[in-house]
Image (spheres, rainbow over the protein chains, first blue to last red):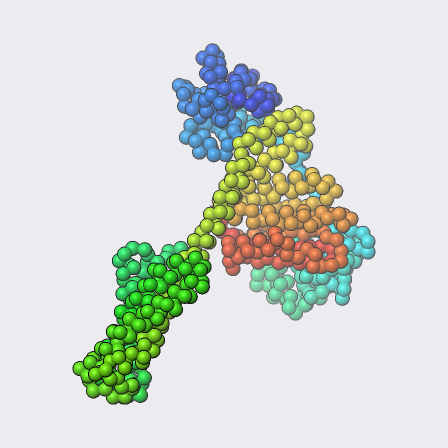
Length: 247
Length: 368
């Protein structure tokens, strides 16, 4: 961070001490911010503003003596204002008052940071917004489904599935690690498998699109196995091929 | 609903018009009933036409009396107050009185009228010189005439009354529901709720990141339900966000569940009716996390392609009986809402298999 950077002096105004606590801790977490004062009402905040310069006010709206919105209207040269409130209803008023951001309680640090970044944008600075917790999206696994075989539930990675063959009362799922046999119907399994990745080529066969090596008139070839294309499914398979292609 | 002013308006001009039309229809109806037969057989004469126009006119005073006595006395005071025996007594009495009135006008006048206007052919002959002898027959004819018209009038009156009552009831019902919802919302005191959540968050924020994360998600969910649901449509990405928050809370609740949730990113420029997809996911947790399942798992995915939203919700369920999970209240409600909101623009498929329950929903969305 630039040493020339001006540290922003912040005033936190909220009648609830615990609510002030959150914002104060957030302010202390960012070196670019400095906590100038904590006030439990607007009159106190007025007094502070007369004594010392303040760059940013984090203001609650619903407070006993004076509403935060009225307080903002009373300021001659208002500093940058970020509203922190439990009320969704004040959002429109907030825009009228020309506030920089509108934080709804409970305020998450990421959301707070976003508001601070809006203030800092004028100074050309941006603090990287990094989630504190490992987001579930980052630790995302490959897609899978579960199937029951005998008494166990078996996890099958979609990427491992080569093709599915329907038998009379059960289904054989051919995967890279092996064959999974489960009691279900072709319609159910067709509905379970995502249509972007799998294609039904026959009344009794569903094939992974990625695993198809070649397509002939009435078969599709996977690694070393040929699967028949059903008459009713020829159009379906034709959609895989570039337009104008005749098989 | 716009109600027809001619039928329902309480303004004097409409009321007068209604009554004039009613009497005109009754009068023409009665003359046509007399004229119709002869006209059909081609034997209609000028005399008949005159007679069948004049005779119904002679009945009118008696009919006036009965109709208005019933409409403004018997119906409001007895029938609508469910005093049916008294109503019946009044009806019988008034019918006899009005038939008598009719007879007293009809019997002395019928023969002079006929002799003045025509030479009568056919029918019952009355004795003009002794009109008292006409009374019994006149009474029977009058009775028929007054009862027919009064029957129609009362039927119209009662039909209107029930219709209006029904209409008012339906509005009251709706207003009652609205009021209940409003008071529920007011009781919750949203600002108190969110301020308190914020205070709890303040305490947990330092000590328990998991608890604070859950609090944030819970408040997103509550805020969404309290404020966003009133809107006709919301951004699809908002609904997805709420599904993710809800699912995270449910997963934290059950711990052992294996959930794979993949919702399309960048769905912001589509809109959807709020809380349409969430019940599907709720359903999934409700049924997919039963104690009977040795390894609860679910797979929730949403893909948007060419304005078509495909939502697929798969969850494991205890093996055996298939009917168990079909058509909970949630799914039935969803079906109703889809019919209303996306008629002919959606497909909903429910597959209930041995070990797995699959719901597939396709909706044609419009880009915002």
